Image (cartoon, rainbow, N blue to C red; front, side, top):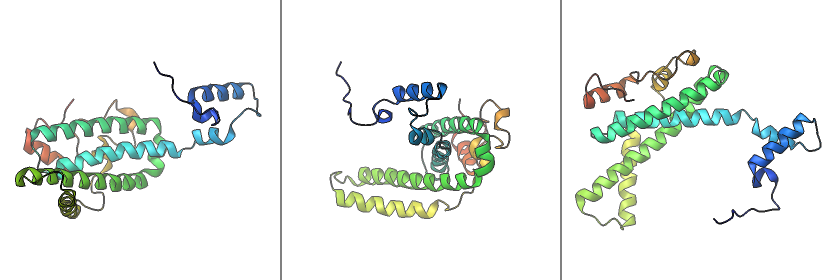
Length: 213
């Protein structure tokens, strides 16, 4: 097995996070202030990390819901997106249970930020799917980068007009639970989705198959 290359001149926090964390924990137990890496230790407890994790989970959940609602995909692709949205909701549920104060104090701002990221991801991915279909239908050579870029730009603009700029999903329907009491349920409600997503799932799978385990 080859050894991992390590820059011995770099700080310990960059060379080995595990060793650094143990060193800092021991220094705190001994109250050895001279050893404590204050700058990195403060960064380790920066609440922005918790916020970033929450926004990332929410972004993934919304992104797949947008694609389910808007893209004219078949059952196989919709099923895959539904499963991805469900996994993202479970991770979002975990983050919310871990930091209920964050959800209570900053929900509107985090939801707006998540929607913005998710909207961009969904629009770009749906445009890419359409561009792939255009290649297949026209028999164009996939190595024509100029044509591919033009097709993708056209499709992206079209999807950009289709997806709302502002969040129209209630958070309870994104997450599958009431954000005020996330700790009371073990996991999100698998049958609870935003209205447009629910309608699409029922259209594709029938009224009893709007969720997956």
